[in-house]
Length: 75
Length: 524
Image (tube, rainbow over all chains, first blue to last red; front, side):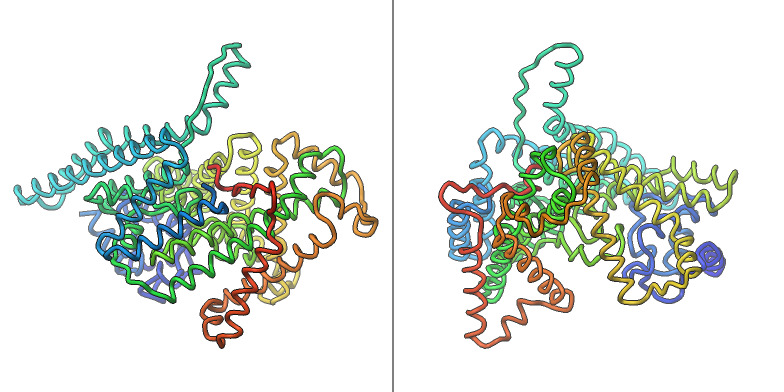
């Protein structure tokens, strides 16, 4: 799941190195515009609804956190 | 009770003395009583409205917290997991949304809309149907600020991103905390609660720093903003009589006036709060150093920007209807088109609302469209802009280019002032026509410029003052100016303190019969 997600997001956003940090949001690598675009990609690709309470920095700070969130929402 | 009045300063000193005389654990009660007195001074009817509003919001958040506790109890009782748990939570969430959240939001936002548009509606009824209603709208002090804070608080509790404040009186203090009630910053009650209810010890250094920040704020407001206001109000009040550079200077002056006025007030508010040991959210981060309009709005009125981001932009951007729409667009027109729509729709909504928040006239709608268009174009065409720079061999990393970007951003901001400062859209059009109607550089030496509210000495004070604020801002970007001053020897330190105080006394705009003009952002 993690590798698949990394491939998908890296293709969609080639300018971002998703493995550069474990605090992508807190370090300012991902801003609100990018997060919105990521949410759109994840929702469309995996057919999930990401409720607003899931949109917290902890769920987007690393590729592992994003993969965990997608798996949780697909369950 | 304006922050510039003697009555406020006396009230503040008495409150600060009482605050430190009483034991630490009940100091928050002193602030609550002070908040009530401050608000009662504005009118008991307004006080009753704010108390009723805070009670409704508190009861609603308590009811939602109770529903969520029930849901957790039911989940634990049934040992539910996975989809069953999600379905149970969704059931309670729906209940919260339909029966608590939406009615409460309608009520408090409706009150804000009534206060903002009540008179406009009465005028419209009169013009359309010749039907006159005597509409005496009571506008509670700081209604925009506490309404926005309350909406944020309710949504946070609903989304389980924030907690319900158990004690009503503590919640009432978050709403009525007097340093921030008039002009913000827009508080996040859960964050403010943590600041207000820590037991703050007496800290001499914090008190000195608080007084210094207040003095700096008073200097910005009384020496610069109120001085510039004399010129801008004269020009914008008689647009037909002026032309060319007189109007251009008024537009630029009004940009500086607004910054000195609003950021000066924020310095007074944050300084006053620091004296109580309470740190408020920053509302300004040297916006004139921004290299783009989007960055400018991340550094200007920060708490309003983050409020719109958290409670409008993000919820709209990730809403089901928008995701469905962009999925359709992606399937039909491709990924790039879907990305553009995903960016544009939430930004359009945010900027229209931001415009309406700032004022009720059509010029504020135009102002929202103006900023929305600039920010959307900058976001959507960012890649093309970068490519154009490369083709033209422009090095966008140099200091000179950065300075060019800062000046460009300032002029964009001044353009925004041209839309709102003259008063109406018709006035803006007059200002534009008059401004481009002639070129009159001789106003600088034939005395014209010095006979419109400000004389030559006043302009010197303005220019020197602006340069000083610019210098201080550069220092602030690198570190704390107050820490740097505190490290100086006692003679130099006190020279700086007395210098600041005397500057306000000598150059401040007041005197017999003078009424310090209200803060521009105090009417929201």
